[in-house]
Amino acid sequence: MKKYLLLIVFAFSLFAGFAQEKDEEVTTYYLIRHAEKDRSDKTNKDADLLPIGNERATRWSKIFENVSFDMVYTTDFNRTKQTASPTAQSKNLELLFYNPKIMYDEGFQKATKGKTVLVVGHSNTTPFFANAILEEKKYQQIDDHNNANLYIVTVTNATKTSVLLKVN
Image (tube, rainbow, N blue to C red; front, side):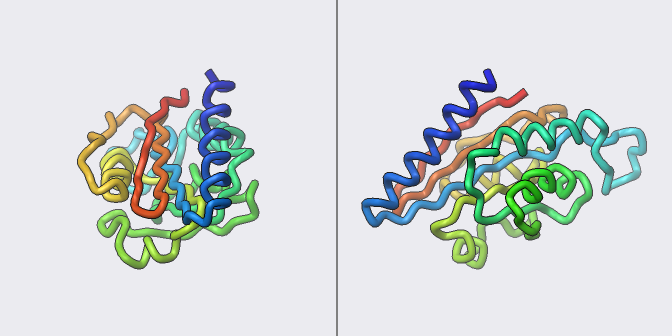
């Protein structure tokens, strides 16, 4: 399965390169939910990742090894920052923050236009962030125990496409 995922990620990266050769501006968003969090304290709204979550965060960085990210965005929560950090560190990128209540606004669009961007969010924001980019209600909220979704949304001029992959 990992080989197929790497092939798909490589194909999207290759497509972006071809489109750029034709003077088309391509923006590609890779959107994931944070990895498995510590649920032991129900009152803790800013939980850290579990060891298995840290392992998943490291796996994401390996999956994204051949993706040339320009930016890594995350919400300002421990679990999203911890999920994004291995990938950001492997690419020598700083974590940038977005407000999950204001997704894909004009400022975000302008800052990311023509870039390849990783966005780490939550079960109740990540699919809706993808929907905001696509300008359609395509994806539903993620089940609270699903940390495996990868949404790849590509914007080429006025054309918007997406794919949803499961990465266990």
